[in-house]
Image (tube, rainbow, N blue to C red; front, side, top):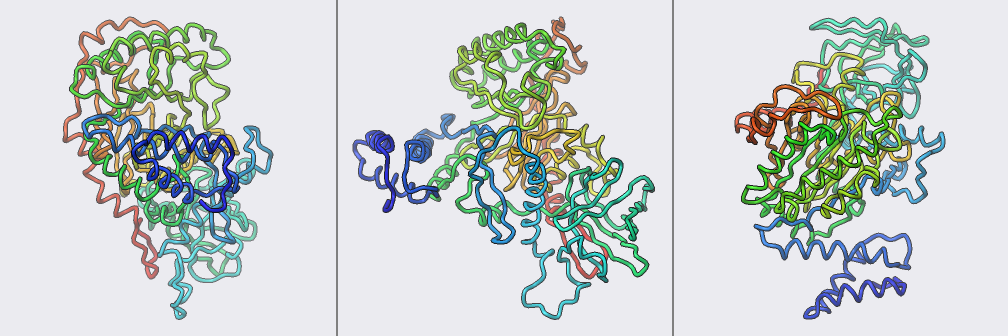
Length: 596
């Protein structure tokens, strides 16, 4: 550790760590120094916080390995509040990411809004620039322009000949007028004359001195094309000033390992950088954690008696199993009515959370061995409805926290690291809003399942909520908290729509469904990344919204059941290989169409 200066409190942190290994203090000190050398610090003067971060990683890894495979490892599980995730920006000149070191106020300046779109575009542009199908071979000097899939800037369209590929964001710079925009210019478009046919879709975009003829008879990829999404389009500018587009879709995905290989030393997920030794040890632990299971429930209305009875049934069922789940994830909304300015029952809602703590406390095995993660919903109490949302206010949760010390209250979205596995939780009625905001009907060639279209949209956009800011406001300076880059292992989309599970290009995505309405939830096994879509029997009818509600038959008629293997396989495994092939894509620059 040559060149570093430790403050007094940092030295105390080092001594405290070494003191925990009396028989191997020299090895512990050497390991700590090696890990500090591997870290990237902005200053050569280290304080207590800098050393404590490395110490925490080493202690967590040591505790994880020391635990037996039959014991649930809570130390291997780490919850990350997205407001603590570092922000990285891409430098297109140096072609590297750099960490933003300045202050990030909640109320950003006007320039922060422009930076939001620029950062999104840069992220996908640097990703697609490494794709072999969209980059010109370095040594192929004889390649003609018609054979190249290289991305052309919108500014270079006028005056160009031959077929071109462009990438831009669909934006509405003026009321009622849409544009296709990149970093060099914007192309105004008009969708009012769009004609939609079953086998032939034509869109005519009117431009000043230029008419863009959008012929989508060849290919449209899966996903929702909404304002703010970034698309890749292929077309040709004809001699009469018509730009004819034959193919359009989202930028292709990049393999997670390929992304990580270019981001060595950068903590995009916010869980800290692991050394190769720690990664190896935690991956071995992850394979042995066959008994770990996460139970995910969405729409847990604590003010609804019938919902609480159904939750008690679930807790009773898991209390009596051989190994209780290591984590319960309870996602909002936690109230059956929106907690807006017209809501005046905050004290009553506080009491409902207290009763929830008493219910959990009445199950001693779950209380002792399980952890509880609470993620707020879009209609829960909070400062506003913008994303990301902060954790539930302590006014509602402080009594529950006293009864359940293992309870964790985090942001929405929320990130979770289990050993080496990265999991993202997001609670929002995203599917309904995506379908409402879609500019063109989604393609049914690959799938007609709306949930699969939703998964394709957010993964290819590398963003959890690519909706217009007028539909879903986002804190400008914290838009990076919604990124999905590099691709996480699992994405949990808490949505009020029907529960669903889908594996897309190696990414496990599932929606546990609405627990209060349908009695549905999901069980996730991180060891195998399998999703078990579950439900309570006798919960076909949806409960009435409101604070009371009788529904006394929930406990008597409902019984905890696991999904049939055929149902799980149909949702998760059956189409995995097919969809992976499609998402990777096959690009033939000599043909007018493209397969995604």
